[in-house]
Length: 232
Image (tube, rainbow, N blue to C red; front, side):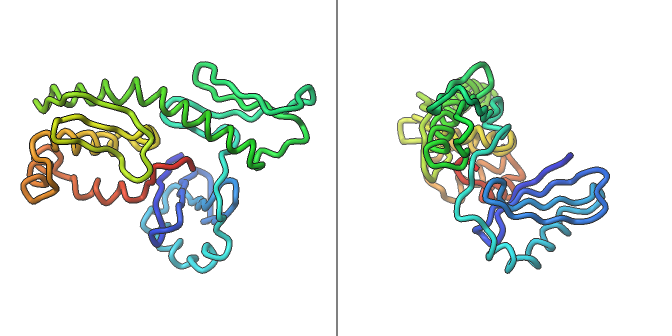
């Protein structure tokens, strides 16, 4: 199975799935899973995107105001979340064991309830932070040495709108939600911030410098706009 995510009309998050054995295109819109388009493996992503725009009115009407964290959802690069219901529980209990975020809840408790989703989000962010604090500094350091772009410090934070930043003292901050991005986009953000150790402003010289390292940076810059630093 092959997948691609995109933001439709700058508002609607969509996941496109290519599945072997499918004979037709299928569109679903759900509060739990959001917008999903399943297609035969041989159908192009471009056709799928055009199909979505033709169904835009339908998506606008049925698009959920809120996305939920669901059972077996991938969290970051290394974690999955499990919702386990039991008749022996009276309250929601949570823990992280190895690469699993486990949310135990009573049988009569719905996983879409605010209290359950709030706990799931809290522990998912904790897992993302654990991943980011191990994965990102190591990756940044390797790129720094390869590109000969030294920095002073790196800090992992939960940022609302930015994937990263670099100040005039070469201190770099990275968003823990980078762990939700494809590897090529993580590299793009890290190289972007390392490039600021040479040129702080987003001027033509800066982008020329980035292009020397990443000749396809314009494509990556456009692609990253399909993602947001949120859990979905």
